[in-house]
Length: 241
Image 1 (cartoon, rainbow, N blue to C red):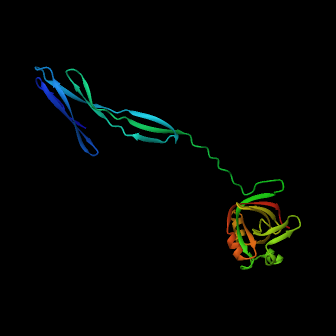
Image 2 (image 1 turned 180 degrees about the vertical axis):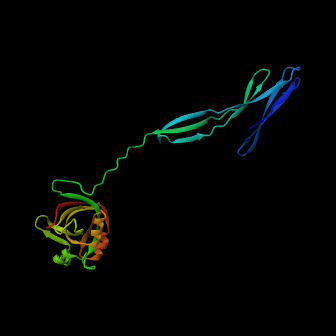
Image 3 (image 1 turned 90 degrees about the vertical axis):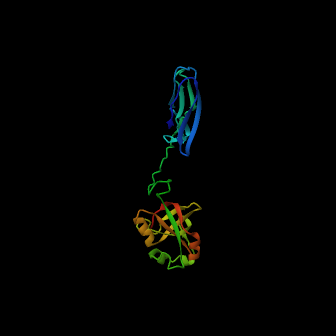
């Protein structure tokens, strides 16, 4: 900011010109000063009026987050050396800062374990995904249990002595041996199934620490319509024969 000092010799009237820079160029302001003493010169002194900083608190903003609402800007004034009269030509604009005080919600991340107890008749419970395969495609999952029972050509249900009419499943044999019965809970439905088949993909998934169950259908067309479902719960009711 450039301020110019004017000196008035003898009685008269002078004009103090004030020029200040802004981001968009230069602006000018003027102030009329009169000298009442014809035998004395008069000094007119320019003075910066500094801005202050105001702090506002907002309980709707995350705690500790600071935002400048208004940028501060100095003002300026002139002082008559004869009368000490001060005239503010441009008031200062205070800087305004907003600080958030809203506490962050405490997020509890559930600990997911591979095996949990669900109810008295549930031996173990697992979380994983379920896919589907058809008995008319590539021999199903194509392993010993499937070949032995040869069930998919007659439908995809099995009549169990204890649990009745249950769906046929393929699973990892190192954990879910043939004859294992489980309650399957998907986002869309709940049903019982029995492991009578196994596949290499399920075995590999188990070795990676994942649970992948394959649901049997008579045809590959039906299996494709079923697709893949995630976040499925498998409650083991009985392990295999």
